[in-house]
Amino acid sequence: MMNKIEHIGIAVKDIEKSNELFASLFGEKHYKIEDVLSEGVKTSFFQIGPNKIELLEASNPNSPISKFIEKKGEGIHHIAFSVTNINKEIDRLKKEGFTILNETPKKGADNKLVSFLHPKSTNGVLIELCQEIVEKDKVNEVL
Ligand code: ZN
Image (cartoon, rainbow, N blue to C red):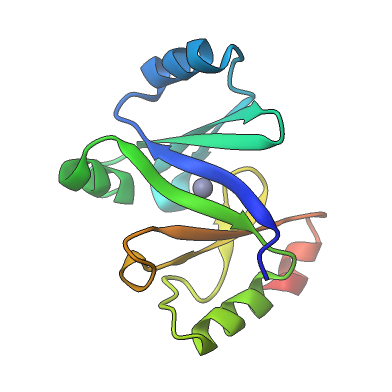
């Protein structure tokens, strides 16, 4: 079961410029910038009331964000849903017939364990599952 939309991810070419653009749009600056080396992305996060927006810039030409922008241009890249137990949710979705891109959750941005569903099994929408990492030592337990 999914709890709520955790954030919406937007692919951008230049995160510095986009941080300024979205800060004027939201009337609020981003609250964090984070490099996710494993994914080849630089991210920033905005909080708008209970909702979050993540901007993603490719940090290398092989990054999934470079490929996305090449194909589709800048824009909405994924929708992330928070889940209480990511492994249980992955099992449930596999049984439902969805294609999971990484069946072993990995450490994503903003202190989360994340896993993605292939857009071909979700009407073209890249879905991210994320589970908050509560304590550092819990990571091994979950994995
Ligand atoms: Zn995300």
